[in-house]
Amino acid sequence: MALENIGFKPQLSFLSSEDKDQIHQGALEVLNETGMQILHGEALKLLKKAGCSISENQMVRIPATLVEKAVESAPENIEIWNREGSLAMDLGDRRSYFGTGSDLIYSLDSQKMVRHPCVLKNVKTAAKVSDALGNIDFIMSFAHPSDISPGRAYLASFQAMVESSIKPIVCTAECRDDLYEMWNIAKIIRESEEALRVKPYFIHYAEPISPLKHPFSSLDKLLFCAEKAIPVIYSPAPIAGSTAPMTLAGHVVQGLAECFCGLVIHQLKAKGAPFLMGMGPAVLDMVTGECSYNAPEYYLAYMAMTEMSHYYHLPNWGYAGTSDSQIPDEQATFEAGLLTFLAAFAGSNLNHDVGYLDFGRTGSLEMIVISDELIDQVRRMQRGIPVTREEMAIDVIRETGPKGHFLTHEHTLKHVRKTQWRPALLNRMGFEDWEKSGGSSLLTRAHQRLLEILKNHQPPLVGEKKQQEIQKRVDRFKP
Image (cartoon, rainbow, N blue to C red; front, top):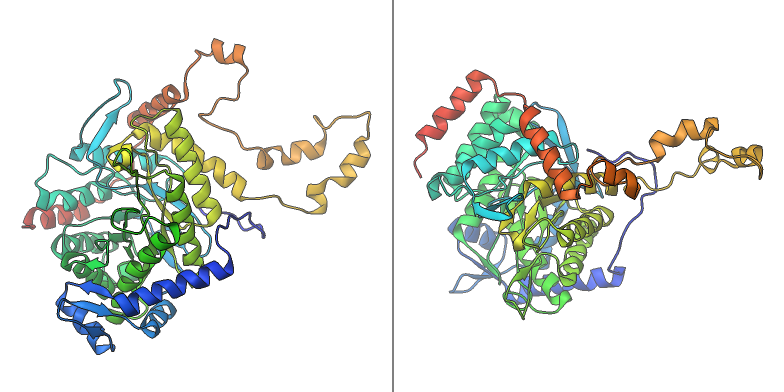
């Protein structure tokens, strides 16, 4: 759902211009003086040909000029289209979109408050639920199916998403082989490779290993995406205090340097190929040993990385709708809402992990439903405050005066629907009315909405011929 264009939009900022300049120079220094370990032959050849120095242990020093050229050649905006061929997202600038995450190990039964290992059915159900929710703009697998062999799990999840929703997909893959089959499935949907290039249907997510290591599989997928013009996210996940410096600035500098190493390789392979920058700024809790998605330091590092994406005019990968709580409780709603607000008002583009709980291990369908409403409210706030003669209502105030009221005034009737946001789940009743209506909690209302979707929503089907072609490719795949 694109944000309407009304001129000025409210914004958040955590870095000064000087701060951004210093972080930029710090990342360049890491790349040029410390370097990155590159564990892929083709990537090494590309870097060597471009003038990088390579040591015996495959540490590559990347000069600033290569980074600057890569930033310059990467596109500022990336259009993403849904399964039916309609424009769904225009990634870039300060436009914000929201979707689920991938590869959760557990799914939570909110009625019994117990979790179970994810299976392929959870992928299908999450995609169907997301398809029905107006503020969920894209989907990821949500679950990593334990009932599918590891080598086939990513491809099976991709097929399930294609069949269970028309929304664009952000996918993960084990290696180039299953990613290649996902690309072939997308070609079947679009009916040609050229049509898929013109109207990208899916985005691939890959990441290096912090600190400073870029493994073969990650780079192999990155290079394949560059070759085929598949939009790709290359986002490190350095853990502050563990695989990255504890300090916020150090955390961001390392993450930016690792991301830009991928950008350089990607643009050397195919200049102008679509790339999204980002960083998963996990924070190691030194008391519990858990990696927090919702520590204040996580928020700050995430906001800094988002601001750096605007500094370079590159689309970015972000986060929203997550919680470290184990169940969809008060903590979960607070954290999911706060992170969603920050993402939107910082102008983060492609924000995933909606519905995540328990440090990214457990998913809740009810949290997706609740977050859909949180996103809707945040988007209302993003519209900002229109200031025109009509909106300031000076003539209306004069006409009404101190003895009148505005309740039945034509101006009120004209503006009430577009000015007032109305919740579907959040409670706006007084205590007596709430009690008479059943006294339900937010979680209960979300569960009821979830049941309605599961019973009544039917995503448009993939055509029978295309479905048969997809099934043949999946059946033939040998990991």
